[in-house]
Amino acid sequence: MQTNTTPTEIILSVQNLTVSFDGFKALDGLDFAMADGELRFVIGPNGAGKTTLLDVVTGKTRPQQGAVTFNGGLNVLRTPEHQLVQKGIGRKFQTPTIFGSLTVFENLEAAAGFNDGIVRVFGRVSADDRAKIEQTLELIGLHGRAHVRAGILAHGEKQWLEIGMLLVQEPRLLLLDEPVAGMTRQERNRTGELLQAIAQRCSVLVVEHDMEFMRSFATTVSVLHMGKLLCQGSVQTVQNDPRVIEVYLGRSHQQH
Image 1 (cartoon, rainbow, N blue to C red):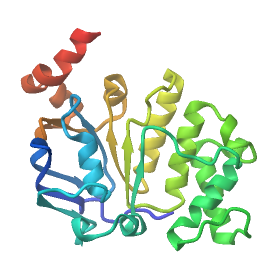
Image 2: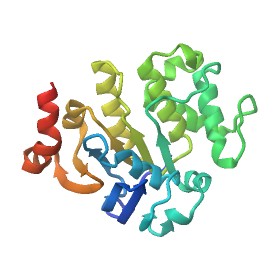
Image 3: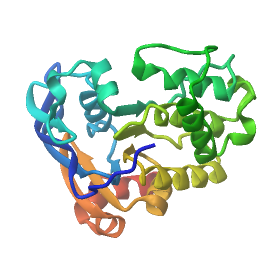
């Protein structure tokens, strides 16, 4: 797996991004950027535009205006979805999408062939791919479960397997939408440690609602509200911002 050598470079730049659905502005002139090698958390109330941002970056949604640049020059808005994956943008949705009838190893083997345009499931594994898969199994903590059918894994293990399936494709930017939803406390902690380890290899953008998880593992947090960037900074900076307390944290505390 690759290691970033220039962590100060901008891996993702979003400028004046606007997305409207039937008159509702999901994103409203959003400006957002993150550095190469960064673990960034994005939070905000429902309807803030978090998932829409991921949809635009992965080519699923086309904005009405704005610019999105990846890895120093790729125009995301003019690049087809499958090419964005090949260029290094990987995305994990909330519900794990794995092959339940295949083993953990076979899932990773299949994923390793995606960037080549071939799905290899039972073919011969190259030495490079085998080494990549073994390394990924260690990283996601499933080496001892390599030959277990994925369908019988615990919820957290399925989430880690799907993250591993993205990692074997060697992304430059990994987008994760609520990766700890439905997890036990132990699974959440293990996932946080995993994300910190992954950030040593590629940039990671996490959309999250679990505030305790965010406080434990985030370094830089971006808060979206009504399609705009409301606040950005350290966990402490964000938690103490009166605007954030009003629109998100305060409301969350009142609910709990």
